[in-house]
Length: 147
Image (tube, rainbow, N blue to C red; front, side, top):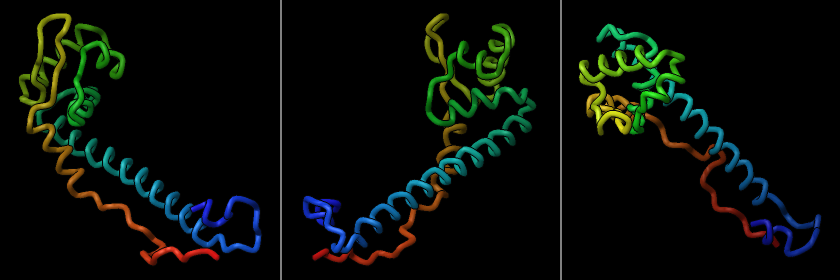
């Protein structure tokens, strides 16, 4: 697009409309993507807060639940740091989350990690399934060919 507008050198008489349109669309689409991600996090977090209250879990468990809802592994050491808690508290919380049917343990002792159960992952899928697709606010007209 830039090569088409500039034709290899600075030529101020050439029409730069297509280049400007391309940049405006790209920036606007990126802003929509960022806002959509923020909205996804907010909606997922709110859903998880409801789960925490329903199961009478400590609020700090949201750190582990959010990670697992994304399909990522939850490791005790990372959960400790995220929730700023001691080893014993982290172990107890993770056992509670397993008992509640929200996390499933994988592996043994030092290699153990936890993954979200289907119930937990479905929360995230529901949020993502509802989000709107980015749209081009400047219309879908085809770019003009510069002269």
